[in-house]
Length: 156
Image (cartoon, rainbow, N blue to C red; front, top):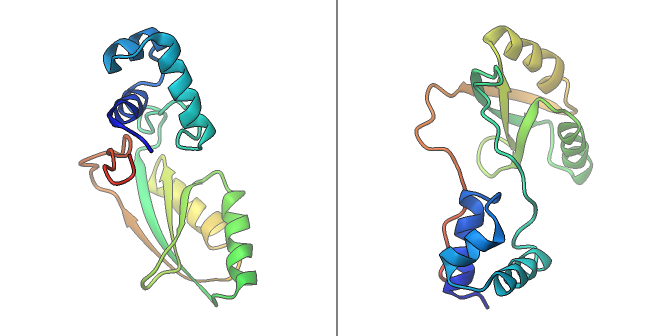
């Protein structure tokens, strides 16, 4: 089971995983060796999956974000697997989620312009296997970005 120190460790790592072990250990009230050991345990348990840099899409020229609902011709395992395999292979698809509701999948796609999105729409999304319907929504403004999970007191 996890405790308050684990929650603090996870919070610190989510806010800035480039901090030194010494800095993190000071903030959570552990020795550097105990802090390092606990982080290793969280990694071994799969709670910490990996470390990565968060890039700013707008500064990279991706000025538009679209959420795309995709409905398929059917929901057999073969159809779903074929779609997922193809979506995974497309770098334009930033996220892909199997959903409940009207659409089968929700995709997140970033593009520099509407012209670029039209190309992605035609050549990538519409070309994915077994697509029967596509509905795109343009993000006008991001009010809150996702920066990490809040501590779940039931699990931690």
